[in-house]
Length: 219
Image (cartoon, rainbow, N blue to C red; front, side):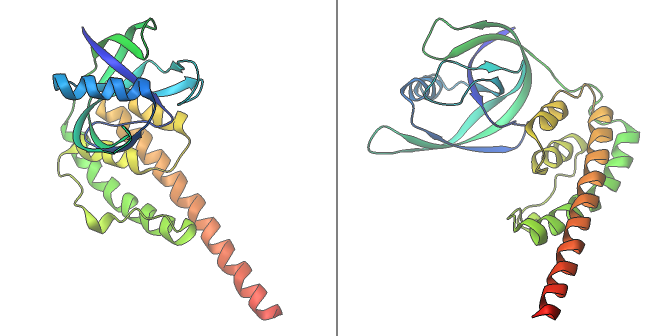
């Protein structure tokens, strides 16, 4: 068991993935200053109910990810831009709402069976789905998720977490991925989601092309 400062956000952070943040609220400036001063991580959790900023402390989901601060840019008015990197999953055991920001006692949730032989074999089949997804997403939605700018991890679990972070899906579905108990469960969920999303985007892309051609003929 350990204690963490909790940063509830409308995002899901996965281990090994980056999280850029703009810190402007006094309570979270205080939280980040504390993390920097003591060289400690903070916990990122998806908001279950409530708002990110300028309101009462929200209700978070119970499973989140620790975030280590990799880079900080201090702005003249006290605001900060920072880059944090996800490290470990955790589960909230108790929440303390007595301070300006949430604090929690948590248990770390290491992934079980991180690299079984079957997962290692099956992960190879996920790679082309990731590339196909990013390619069609860029064409359909003009999303800038340039896979060519970084190398997918060789190890299975880091690759699975990168794959989960890349998906442009509802946050509650991403939360379900974060909460997967084993790498085999996570891989199974990712395969289903990538097949679904590639199929949906492909249909959207082909129907848009057909509509564009029809409009061109009419003109």
